[in-house]
Image 1 (spheres, rainbow, N blue to C red):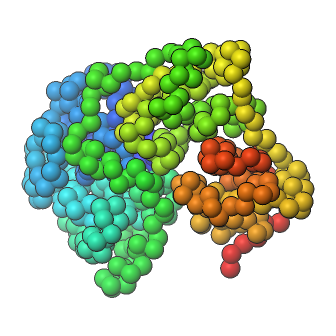
Image 2: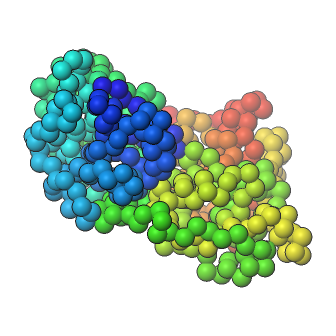
Length: 454
């Protein structure tokens, strides 16, 4: 059997094509960007016969529906997932024989109530375990995404999954998790994507805790912040996303038409932080198109928003693809000719200065306030003295904590999140805003000592 991984770096997740032999293949936990799977299948002359979902995903829109529609593959999902799509329901412990391989659905609740992991065994070679979020490299996926009322019960279920779900599999079993480093779903210890059961049994810190209550009290304290869209995509996947052919692409718009549509839409400026700083449309959200573009779109923009795009280098098709990945399907258009066309039409642009560390420090010494929009663990590792800490995902709801009578120096790790934060402040009515170019790294490189929490 040949396993072909596909990693979405922005989401921190992996999906897998498993070649079974005789030209057949299955796919585990695909996301909505299905063209890369289809291209790989075609290149290898493979027929997709099944799509296996370990759980209802909260951090991305599943590609199972799209793949089934395009290939005729059967969707396999836990019977108690409550999916509205036509699926082949699986029960815990159920075994399938597929092209000489035995696939066993192992009950592994915790990350979600219905979670299954798939053990795949062939005549030769070590078993494969596609573990979703039930066991990942150095950790396991979070248990708080259903509801606060269920977090304790799911954490207890996760404890028992870690200690009992995979005991029948040998140490040489190859582990292929869905969640991994960089995922807001996971609590892994590093950036590695795959492992073995033996290694995890020896090194995974979660497996060293033998007391259930200790695990239940500690594990939820390790979770990173949860993007807002996590709490709506589970239901979105349960109902079944629309197919791509049913979704209208954004039309190219003149500056005049783009301006007319702004009243009922959110303008997303996908250009670099440098281009945004140089000139942007008032009220636009800076979200540079990069690996984690989709995460911040889903976190900051209402789910039913009509989206207008300002872009120069990134293709509109790629932006749409990433927007669909987190459930956005209403595209009002894109600005043909970019900000140059906007300016040529006589319409004004705004600026938010991008400053170096020396200029930022001078502003702070002259009375400006610094705003750190990073996550708590980043702030604890080193920050500008007296900085106000408001993570980007919660900034819009906490602007009352920021003085409006003096300049605000916004910073993050490199400058992209700070650009987004500055755009949110501008929309909230702040006037004197600058972005520290290079973030806390540039601050340190300039010889300015960061403060640390002890």
